[in-house]
Length: 243
Ligand code: CA
Image (tube, rainbow, N blue to C red; front, side, top):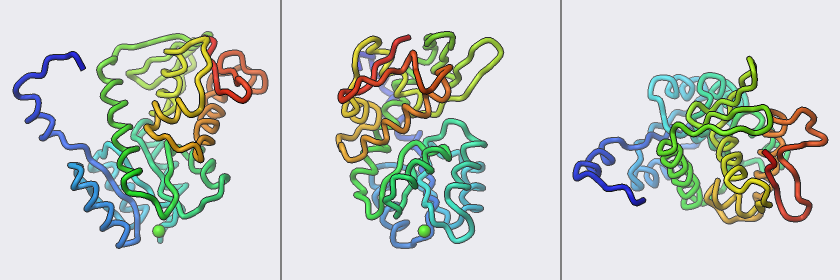
């Protein structure tokens, strides 16, 4: 924020437009998303099948993927898993008509970072996308950051956590949750604060999102997930990191 802006900065920003890939087969939704996202200044490509979407994700290198779960040729979860195997860090937001909690968890387990339930508010979706890009910009400005939790060393630039010869990838939101908890080490951070600062949203109904990510992080970090030593639950309040 306090950094001086070079005169050419604005032009550069305008040249480097963020790319959003929409994998969705409903023409009306595609049209609405394309219009709204282009209006926001994003470059948009849309594909109507999982196969075409995966190909475009490889060829076009999007900065964010919006993925419908019900595609004509393939199960969206499988598309999500394939996408995640090929690209560990690109943010994936699932567009789902399925409001069931289990479906959302399944989506997150498949490697998605977030989800919106149809019919969704385009304004909220755009707010979440913008929050992702703001956090990424912060990440780049702290690009050499590494920190430790227990025996793990977390490299924020590489999205990798390592211990001895073992290393694991961290997705965008997993890393953001860890970073916020770590900034506030030994303090309780509420679900609402995590939602607001990491996801850029204030909606409490989705606070299970936070819990789901905590489960995923514990799976990666903790020796014993059932009695975690680093990411602690503070009952009724939130979570606390003990590095
Ligand atoms: Ca569909």
